[in-house]
Length: 390
Ligand SMILES: *Cc1c(COP(=O)(O)O)cnc(C)c1O
Image 1 (tube, rainbow, N blue to C red):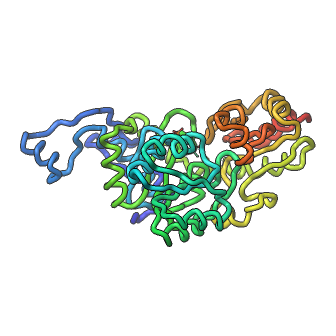
Image 2 (image 1 turned 120 degrees about the horizontal axis):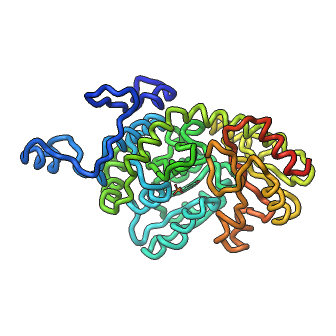
Image 3 (image 1 turned 60 degrees about the vertical axis):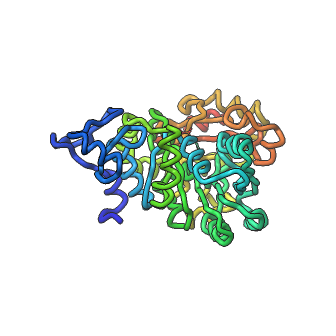
């Protein structure tokens, strides 16, 4: 528990000044540590004395970032990782063994699908994918013994919403542990642990950095899980966050709330602006009235987030024409950046899926994903307006 509210914690959380009394957080670029005496070294290794041993295990700057993010999510513990996928993989692999089963929502980040569908089966761990919006489908899948549940909401790239509390209730009823990928919402808009989830994972590469500079990830949950199986798995397999990236990310967290709130209000306005344009078949924005799950999105999230999904009539040709005509938006597969970005998932982030798999999750050739940045909303409107043919 913290004595401060989240907006204070994102600026002050985890700050431990060095004897120099610096205002901004110090950065400790060190791989190793020294000890006063051989006895101290022995005691620290034995766990009788607190202290850092080696930066694969822990580092003061990485600890600063972990503590700051932990306070934002309201979890007992947090462990940073080298990338979002290192966090996703460690959260699953540290707790699974041959013969175990996972149930996951079908609309997932591409590499998460590859881990669940291709890599884990090699070690005898199978995953059943369900339509995350369909609570009966979750219940049916959970009727077979299940160790872990994995879901992403809002989902990438279609912004479907999954009822976290309802899935948690069904998973816990059969003793399964629930992991939520909270990348699209960030801790500013959605707090899955408060809705009952056991573990939250982030790609800090996205909004948490917010300026497209670093790769990173984080896993949050109970002290028992994070300091138990997760730490054991991570410290020996090595996907450690670098202290340099941790420092950038800790400083980024100071403005997370401001950035994500602004990006969300701009995104909501732009989604409404393009919705009724000729040539636009459909837009999907979590809290917009036109979203089939708007009510759930408003209940579970404080704002709709920075992503807008747009489906253009005219397939891939229309999507490419639109993207190439954009002058302010950049074409990129990244998201959560200060700069607005446009992605064509069918030929980039989700190009490795078969056409049937893409159809099953609803990614058509005319579909474009927009990540809204921090530019002036009027400039973004003008750019969308001219790219959609004035
Ligand atoms: C980017 C992303 C990941 C993976 O993160 P990396 O930092 O690229 O490894 C996982 N889940 C979601 C929803 C993402 O957007």
